[in-house]
Image 1: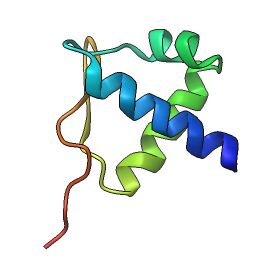
Image 2: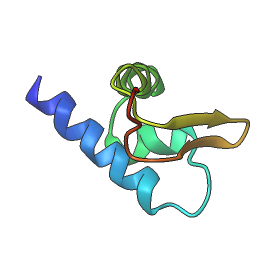
Image 3: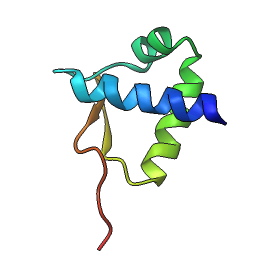
Length: 69
């Protein structure tokens, strides 16, 4: 579980520092996991209210975390 949390933190940092959308393939290569693991991580992070958007060019981070009112 700790490994997954660390990977998701790295994923957020990659998206935060990128000036453009980052593809799932690029993320999987950078993090050393399959693209499916990236898709699952993105789903978990969205469930935790991270503002991750999917575009035809890749993922972008709109805001680190959104608040539910």
